Image (tube, rainbow, N blue to C red):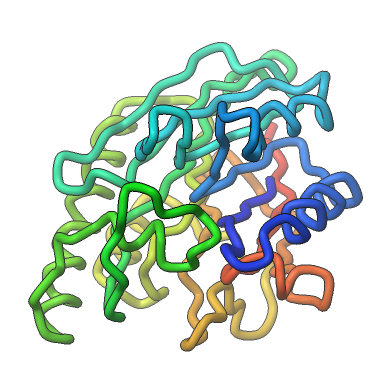
Length: 267
């Protein structure tokens, strides 16, 4: 399983090609992308179509949560080497540009469920006001769409957004309460390892980094350095390996490092 929170909003023509090259060199059976941008405009990036060309024999689950100018979309993408037999989406009532998708994937004779999510961010920094003609090469574009924390001070923002994140995570956990499928929950949780939210998730799911990772496991590296991206799994999986891909090849592709884990279904 590979997790990659895109996008480097600056110099994105070059970055786009480097991301594609990286994915070709380091593919995974299941790949989860957050803040994924694609456009149906002939003069812009149709990233979804291009990835379908790069991975022609794979299965795609894409849902967008933000659309501007009718053709430009931001959302979540899961790519699977194995057939996706069911696709579902969770829209959060408390955030318009965050969400979750989950894909039921046929792996040999088993069905596994993979959640791909992007939870509420802290929005601690002042953002430029978004304009209808604003393009995705503005690094603050995505966050500027969310005005829910406008006018709050530092601690109010943290408190408010922690509540939103917890509500979002609870809605995901509730959906999977009575499901027996082996389950993976991966994504940008926008929260640190020892938060209330993480403790809530760890009641049922294990953190692949804790089991097989090394060092601090930093995944976010813009202004501050945090581990906020995770791959969780239930007890039906065994973790064989985990890697935070923080190297010269990846550090300029996004403000998040990709993470990767090898999971094995227990017999």
